[in-house]
Image (cartoon, rainbow, N blue to C red; front, top):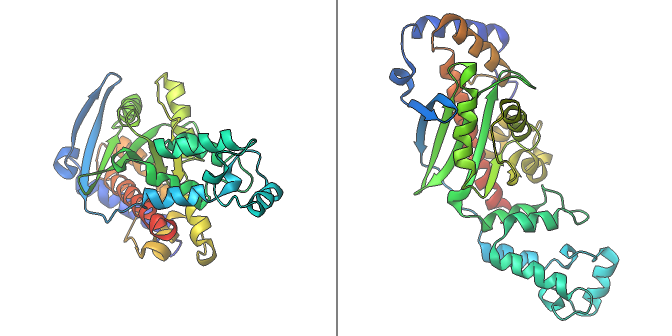
Amino acid sequence: MSAVMEMDYAACEQLKRKLVREYQGKTLAAVCGGQVIRTVAGECFGLEHRETVSFQIGDPETVAARLLSEVSLLSGVGEHKCQILKGQGHESIESLLSHPRFGKNAGLFIELIHRRDVRSLVGLIVRRPGFSHSHPLVFGTSSFCQQERLLFLDIETMGLSFEPIVLIGIAAVEGGEVVVRQYLARTFAEEGALLTALQRHLEPSEAIVSFNGRSFDVPYIRTRANALGIACDLAKTHFDTYRLAKRAWGDRLPRHDLGTVEQHVLGVERSDDLPSWAVPEYYDAYRRTGSIGPLVPIIEHNRQDIISVVRLFNALHQTWC
């Protein structure tokens, strides 16, 4: 959230005290809906929110044509060799199928595109000079994913390292709607249940989409899952909208935090959003007082983050694909 919109410390403290009083004696189910979720690792609390969001990813055939036109994506084809090949009339990877040196690699690349093997394609492309995970062609491969198998992810924690995860938010596109599911730890002992609930969604997913999740969310989840001895398969293709947004719109953004990107790209300004730094303090207030009041803005902050990641992903497709 931008500095203009963030609540300052005094305002956060005032709101926290107000929420404790206002929600004392009320239950999560009564205030937020949701229900207890039971897993093999214990219980946590689950919430679900459905929202209609315009969601249209790029045309796979158009993306495939762009990939096939980039000869430098083939292993062994550097800038100099690329110019030589083009001078010989090789303007596409398909034209190299019968090439004595590059034909085999061309055939493999074309086969991966036909199979829509996003993970293998991304792995090949990012090993080529100049093609990082934030490159538009790498992002374009997300058009090959089934929409329902994209997993949008955001977490809330008690600190920046080694502290418990208290809320995991995920979203998926289902039947024209974006469905946000949140798993809340009512106590630190329920963290294992959060991670187990997440794994249920990771198993069928094809790719993870996040905002700064490659650097924060996924390593954090992996650390906490390892500490608790919980299997959590995070070896997925990952499209990080933080890095992608910096590349797409960096020259028009004064900062690159989610709130700033929301304002300048999505035209969204949140009202009284809880700053991320306040999440541990609000969760501690909930633990001390037993009032669910301080949990309410944490849940809403996470939900809005997830929806914004979905919208950013869509905006990137409209811009690049």
